Amino acid sequence: MMVPLQAEALDISFKLIPAIMIFLMMASFLAIGYVFKVADTEGMWVAGRGIGNIENGMAIGANWMSAASYLGLAGLVALAGFYGLAFIVGWTTGYFVLLIFLAAQMRRFGKYTAPDFVGDRFNSPVARALAAFTTLLIAYVYSVGQARGMGLVGQYVFGLDIIPMIIVMMTITVGYLALSGMLGATKNMAVQYVILIVAFLAGVYVVGWSQGYSTVLPQIEYGALFTELGRQFSEPFLGDNTFYLWVATAFSLIVGTCGLPHVLVRFYTVRSERTARWSTVWGLFFICLLYWSAPAMAAFGVDLFGNTQGAGAYAAEGGMTGAEGDVIVVLAAQFANLPTWFVGLVAAGAMAAAIATTAGLFITASSAVAHDIYTELINPDATQRQQVLIGRATIIVIGALVTVTAFNPPALIGELVAYAFSLAGIVLFPMFFLGLWWENTNKPGALAGMSAGLLIWITSIINSVLPTYIGFLADIAGGEGAAIVPIYAQYVPPIGAALVGTPAVFIITIAVSMVTDEPPMETKRLVRQCHSPEPMGQQQSAQDVVSTDGGEPPADD
Image 1 (cartoon, helix red, strand yellow):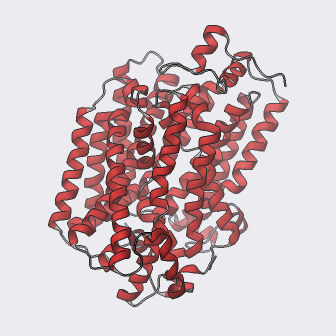
Image 2 (cartoon, rainbow, N blue to C red):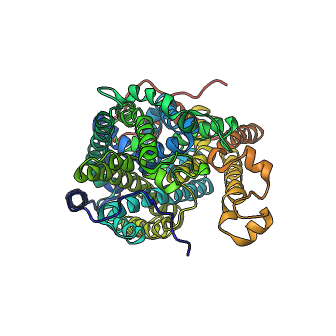
Image 3 (cartoon, rainbow, N blue to C red):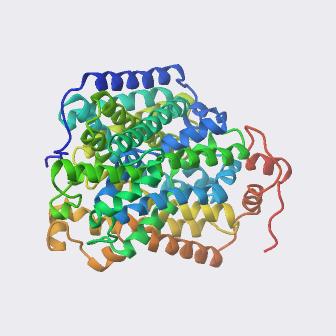
C-alpha cells in the first residue's frame, strides 16, 4: 500500500486542550444523535418534514461546507491562484439556480429521495435504479475527501498517524448516523454549522489582525497582499490549469450543485415550498460567510508559508505540497504563532464541516438502498423496521469503503469533491430540471440521457484518473499520470466533464422524448401542479392534489 501524503509543515503532536475540545464535540454529536434517535422511515429519511427555514438553512450550510470548503477551498486557491476561484464561483452560483428553478418545485413534488423523484416522475424502476446507483457513487467519491479531512485534523490534534485517525473519526460518525437518521443529523448539522463558522471566521480575523494583514474586513483587505505575493498567488492559469479548464470546472460545479442528492433532499425535510425557498436563501447567506473569507485565509497562508518555510506556494517550484495545501487553514494559524488551543479551535471547525457533509451523504446513500432499491424494487412489502435496518447497514458498509479509500485518496480533497459534482451535474441535474420544467420529458428520454451521462463520466475517470492507480491502464496511457486519450482528457476532464456532458444529456433526453410517446396525462398534471400558485399543507404533495381533484390542467403545447 502506498504511504499517504503527509503535510510536513504541520506540527503533528498531542495537544491536550484541542484534544479535549474535539472529544467534547464528538461526544455532543453522539448525545444529540441519541436524543433524536428514530425508529420510522419518515424520521430516518426526511426528519418528519418538520424542519424550519433557519434551521434548514444552517443544515444546508453545514451540509454544503465540507472539508473541501473549510480546508480544500483555501488550499486550492493557495496552490493554484486564480484557477482555485473557479470553485468559489461554481459552488456559490449553483445555489442561485437551485433557489430559482428547483427548491420549491422539488418540495411540492414531495418524495423521500432524489431517486424517488426520478423513479416516480418518469414512471420507471430502471430510471430509479440508475439514479440510486448514481447517488451511491456520488456519496462514495464525495465522502472520501471528508474522511481524509477528518484524518488530517485528527492527526494534527492527537499526534498519531493519519490512518488510525481516519478509522476512529469515521467510526464515531457512522455510529451516530446509524442511530439518529436524518432527524438527528439535521439537529447536529445546525450545531456543526455554528462550530465551523465561528472557528473559520475567528481564524481569518485573528491571523489577519495579529500578522498585520487586515483590521476589520480581512475579506477585502487581503487584496493588498497581491503586490507582495505577485505571481506566487495571482498569476492566472499556470501549467495545466488552462482557461478552458477554469470554465469547465466552474460550470461543472454550478450544475453539480443542483444535482447533488444530499442537497436536494434537504427540501423534503421542510414544512412547505415557502420554507424550502427561504431555507435556500438562509443557506446561501450562511455559505457566503465562509466562501467570502476563504481567499483571504489562502492569501495569509501562502504568505506565512513563504516567510516560515522559505519557499513559495507552487508545488511545481518546490514549494507547498498538496497535503500542505489541504490544511493551509490550520497551517496559517500555526505559522502565525497563535496559542495551541486557538489552532485547535480552527482544526475543530474543519472536523465539524467534514462530519456534517458526510452525514448528509451517508443518509442519502442509505435511503437510496433501503427505500429506492430494497423497498421499491426488491421487497415492496418491507416493514418500516426492515427499511430502517437496511438503511443502517448501508451506512456501516459505505462507511467502511470510504474509510479504506481515504487511506490513500486519488486526488486532493477539493478535486475529489469536484469529481462528484461532475457526476451529479451530468446524470441527475438534467433529470431534475427537465422533469420539473418540461412535462413532455418521458421514460425513454430519461433512460437514454442518464445512460449517456454515466458513460461520459465513467470514461472520463477511466481515461484520466485510473491510469495513476492501475498498472495496465498506465501502460496503455504510456506512463503513470498520463491520460489514455489525451484529447478526451483535455476537453472532458473529470473535474469539468459537465461542460460537455450536461448539454449532451439535455440534447439526448429531449430528442428521444420528442420521437417517442408522450408521458401519461397524470404525469403532466403532476408536473404542472409543482408550479401551481396554490399553497399545500405540511404533509401534502403534488401527487396528493392530483389524485384528489386532478390538480392543475396540463399545458396546451
